[in-house]
Length: 518
Image 1 (cartoon, rainbow, N blue to C red):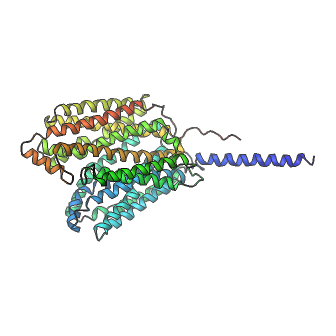
Image 2: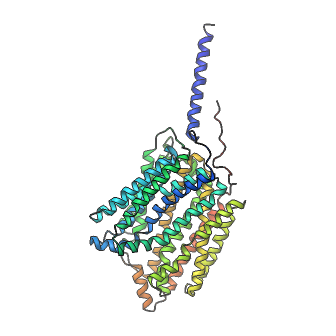
Image 3: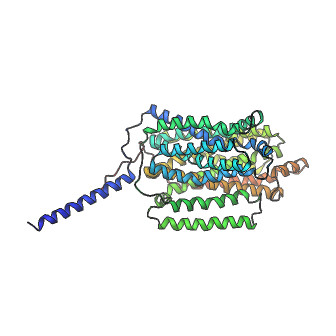
């Protein structure tokens, strides 16, 4: 008996340690003490706050465009003017995965408050900037805050809305981005012309405070997915550092420097080396910054590729089609902006996507049909790029609506396929890769346009195109290849969408938990 008692105690201690380890493992993937189910009325309240936060981030990607000449004259500095846009692009792209990861660790509300707070601080710094350098730093700080807002909004929707019903909310969020894309430049021009350029940034303060108040109050109902571990800081730094030189190369290539210049080649080489180091860290870290389970998920890979290519075409056409209107159809800048509205109106497609996910078992059919129609529409523009303006407008309506079908369905499909505790990092990675691919698509289409026009790095494609058109040169033939490249990238988007596995959408917000084995 004296021998058996210690054995019993040892066995009991082992069982206790195993149970404690099982509880710790369960805490990694299970929400801690959720405050209870969220009612439909509470979802609406939460979503209103999210829309205001999304408006804050979306508006500041477009509102600055028309105010840039005024800012350049104010500081007598046009050489560094492009950095006002580039600084926001670099920082917002780099931090998107970090916000997603941290929200999976510390909760959505804490990270949303952090993002909005940094965005407001950057806005105040930019508004009060005494020189161009301070303004650029303020824009960079804005990007650090604003880059996390969209993935956080997508993650919160995933927390409170079942995947089958989630499409309609993603569509409503798309309305915010379309409204900002169309109205942002107009509002920025009005504020810069009739008030002061700094009003563009001061406007963010009351909007940001309202968004912070609403999200702080409403997101208290969201369950936290707190995880007891350390963040892979080295992996985070390597991932963010690898994208910055690549984005700079894609932004400067063909415009500021030749694609084969030492500057561009050096940036690409630096990005390649940092990407290799990040890949090495992924396989070495005990729990990598970007989990391999997310990267290896086929829905994540195919959905991200499809959405990124469609987004790239959308952004590129929004940039180059106004020049097409001015050079080929001889429209003014204002008329070109109005003619571009059908392409920017992706809202009908987003709403149709929401209905498809709600009522169709095979929800992929909606964006597949849409992309086929978009390819047909672009084929007409490739065949005859000087079609009458009315026909061009109708074809662009088809393209815009079709691309609007892709975003909600790929986003919800990814959220539905990854573990719920990793939705934040999946949304951060989705937005990260979408920004990189979009920059690549814009760079390729821009290089095609510059080569066709014979413009040299440092020159203006718009000036060359309009002057050639005035001289009687058929510029429409140049834009034929721009539309052809858009057709190619959309065909790739369709291919990846076809390859994306169509998993049944869940009717609840989280997958059924698996109890840990003792």
